[in-house]
Length: 557
Image 1 (cartoon, rainbow, N blue to C red):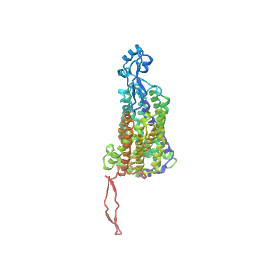
Image 2: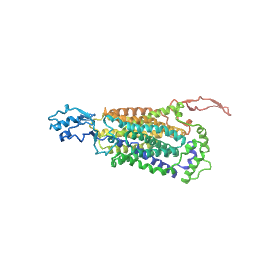
Image 3: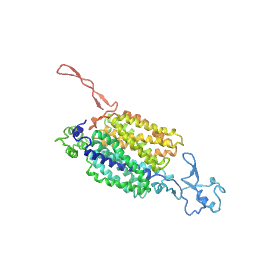
Image 4: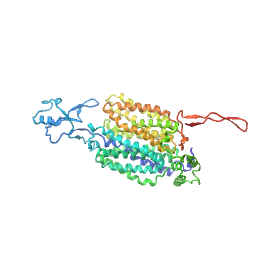
């Protein structure tokens, strides 16, 4: 137990104060669930074909044969082309002369052209998406995955900026400012006149989305006691994130227009304004800044809410512990300063990067799975709920390192097995994909909590934010993993499965934090293998005349 935890032990683990902080912070996570993955429906590509201009007065036979047939990219049946049509002048001439397609005219000899007059989109699933409104198809199809990538570029930027701002100015203020940014800019996004404007605003939404998630996560981790912290950091925030994810397909099912859907996703953000007066600042962070009186005021208020009596002096020992560390400003460079923290950081960045690739690629792929897009997305969200519950069970009773390894390695194997399934066994392939999603989601929940436990208070928000920032390289390229389906259906699964399984093996190098108190300073951190030096045995002479060997100590390099 650290000095801080000993000083605040009189509050108990689960009083009214802790319950309020737990549930209000979890509630603040819900919008992240539907905002982060809303692009699944906002930018889905409906079935489409070239538009035949109204001036072309074609016979019914030629209207039905105006689009050439081509083999599907995955092989199989012939389907109407999405990006070409027979040359309008030629088929109009054939129609006026009364010639029949396939009888009097060999269609293979008719010249083709691009969709010069635009496209017509099937509206049986969506009234409109950004793809259908701005024609992000055919030669402009590269803009579709780029839309998601630009959002995740915003997430990367937010991860970089918010962590340092939070460690410098406080968890609470960053939490609420970034929640406001996410809500207001999502509302602005509703009125986007063009694709570039939509992407520019989406970038800012991404900045706010990850910033408030990380701030809420770290704030709860630092305020709550050890047992409740474990529930909050694994099952708590994750289940509420999954709840928001589950709301997305339900809302999208009833609102088929992308602008109205965005508006519906924006409105809940305004309901969080009153939480400012109920969510406190982190006393740990205040102590790390030398603001002992403010930290004591929050703890005394918590004692009053929990109906317990606070001691006259609370933070005498904690103040001594953190005061020397708080005099020095900390920044992102401290994550690479010593050999020990450098190896922990680099390893975690690699693990976060791969987990994010697998998680977001599988989440964004739901629209491409066989069957109803809304049901597949809902199924993908439902799979996460037991995964988050399992993450709490594993985090509560199992080794962090082995839990992370087991979930990553099994997730990789499930994804690799998909390529072995015959093409007609669609249900089995979807089942394996959902099992892979289950394992990767469990690993993601464990990884967030594990990372927060490895880093000290003075760097925790910066470290979690930087890990999240590093992982966004994975989320930026995740849409292009799905884009590889155009060349081979199995290729994305082979790449994701291999990376995930290998990263599971890499995670075994991380130090164990199970049963350890949260470190408050850099010197309290656990040690990466090979990054501690042993001080030699020395002999001391006691008053009794005995020589006593001092124990070896491990010092982080």
